[in-house]
Amino acid sequence: MFRHQGKKRTAKHNLQIAVVLSFVAGMVNVTGFLFMGKLTTNVTGHFAYFVYDLSVAEFWKGLIYFLYLFAFLLGSFSSGLLIEIANYYQKHNRYLAPTLLECIALLSVWAANTFFIGMLPLDITACILLFAMGLQNAFVTKISNSVVRTTHLTGLFTDLGIELSQLLYVKRNHYETQKPQLKNSVRLRLFIITFFFLGGLVAGYCYAAQQLELNTLLIAVLILLVGLFYDAFRFFYIRNKRHYENHHPRRKHKRTIRRQSPHSH
Image (cartoon, rainbow, N blue to C red; front, side, top):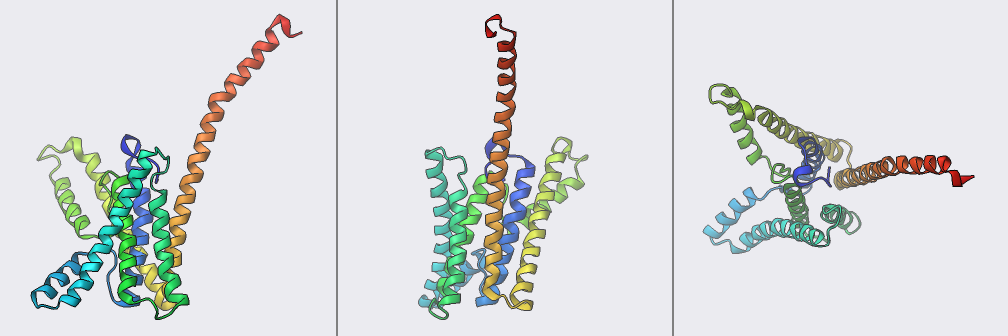
């Protein structure tokens, strides 16, 4: 899920990571909005407010929105930098560091607002959450070869509309060879939208109905850590299985040869 990349990556891998990360993004988005009334998974609206504040000479307010934009950018940059460093040192799991950093960012928001209530300004909290979502959006874009994006839905709905229209004219416009790819792409986008919605629904229920408030972020962190653990477990299991299958027949063959050898007695 996290490890496969390049030609080794399949539609199934993209679907798995899309389900996990879109669910987490939906949880973070709703939790952030309920806690401070700000959207924390994309920057389109913040950019509009930034431009508006500049146009009416509200430079201080504009600076706040600029910090939101910069936090998301910094998260994307940090994620990309960590991946490039891992590529340089040829690490197996290049996406471990960005994912763990996202977990740390979410945990810092939870801890600061749980144990030091009122000490961390809401604007800084928003910046940290935007930084975390910038991290996530960058590494999922990188790992999926720009196929999967999980923190905002505008582009997804645009692509989904285009691909649905192409499916209607598969035969007329001779898209037969592209039909399987189109179906996989439509299914992927529907899954991202669905699990973003479900993540938000679960977060809203936990935050308000169960009164977990910012403790809801702990669920998002747990999901990320379970995803990493599952990926690592599966990797080592398959590697050891292949190692055993490759070497066990050789050992068995060597024992057979020694038994048949006249010098073995």
